[in-house]
Length: 86
Image (cartoon, rainbow, N blue to C red; front, side, top):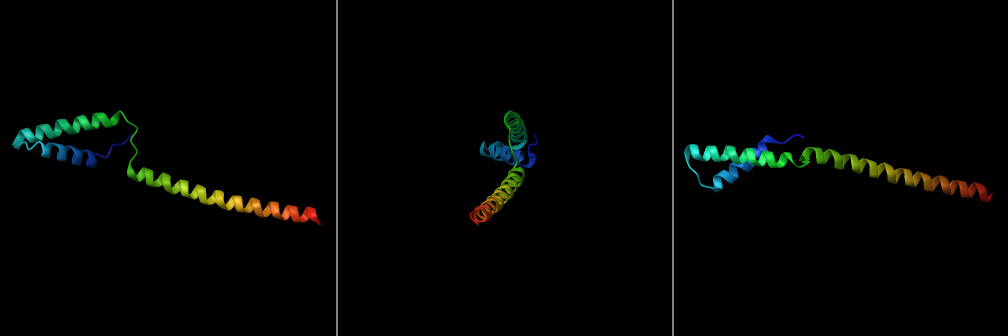
């Protein structure tokens, strides 16, 4: 699993900033929070936004192909009915 470290840094920074710590203490807290968040997220099967977009595009392509094939089958069935009716 790949974790977006920029996102983790942003989350850790916001949490540490909200604690209103100053100087080295803030940096230490930020590092500890980042580690805790990263550890918690590693227990989950997290999907990145980019990966989700790829999956959505693949799903849409499959849906489009299914629609195309359903129409083709319906057309072929109609042709078959017409041929059998002659």
